[in-house]
Each structure stands twice: as structure tokens, then as C-alpha cells.
Amino acid sequence: MKAPTTVLLALALALAAPALALAHDDATLDAMETPNGGQVRMAGPYHFELVLADNEVSIYLTDHDDVPVPSEGVGGHLIVLSGERSRIAVAPVGDNRLAGRGTFERSPDMKAVLSLTFPDGETWQARFTPGNPGGQG
Image 1: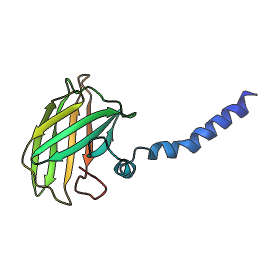
Image 2 (image 1 turned 135 degrees about the vertical axis):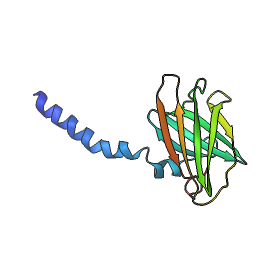
Image 3 (image 1 turned 90 degrees about the vertical axis):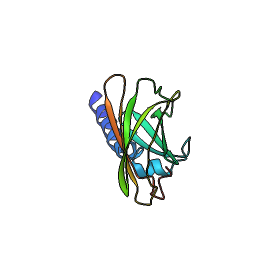
Image 4 (image 1 turned 90 degrees about the horizontal axis):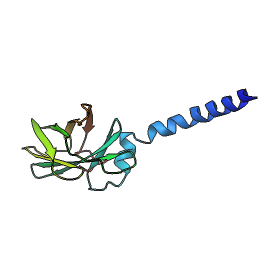
């Protein structure tokens, strides 16, 4: 009588799948309190937290359980779209942090695209809306 058990398991997974998919959507991430006061986005197996200061950006890396991921060997850039387009290189500066400096204006319609390449050669991207009231940045 494995068939009823298999059917019940499949049904349970089908019912749980939408809730699991919503667990990491942008609206849910924006509603969460973040460790460093920035905006968090999911990219593959990672969470990227973008924190903006005056012409400086910080990116904090964690996994889906909010465990810090080492930034050593990670590199990439952030493209900021706000008035003009700025490309800011980011490099490791701490245990799970990358940082970079560049000129950008903060605005309500500000957007940013982060692209990071990890030591295993995988590249992950995330899109941020730090000017959005739901997105701290």
C-alpha cells in the first residue's frame, strides 16, 4: 500500500510549494528586519544585503539561513541607475562583506543591479530598489 502514502506525500508537497516559493520574494524580504539595515535580495543559494552610504556601497553575503558566507575570492560590480548610470567595483573588505566607492545620487526611483562572481566561477545577480519605501538600502 505504498501508493496512498506516495499520493499523500505528493499532495503535501504540492500544497507546500507555493508557500516555499513566496518565502523569498522581494516583498517578503523587504518586510524583514535586516542585519545591517540594508535591502536584501536572493540570488541562487545566497542572500545579498545592499547597504548604501555617501558614495560608498557595502554588500553582505549570507546563505538562506542567514549564516555569513566568506567574501574572500568574491568580486564584482554594482550598477546604480539614479539620474545617471554608475558602475561601482566591489571587493572583499571583511569576513562576509564587500565594498566599493563611486558617485551616485539617492532618489525614490533608484535601482541597482549587483553581479558577483564567486571562487567556484559561478556568477549571481540581484536587482535592488533601495529608493523604494519597502527597500531600506
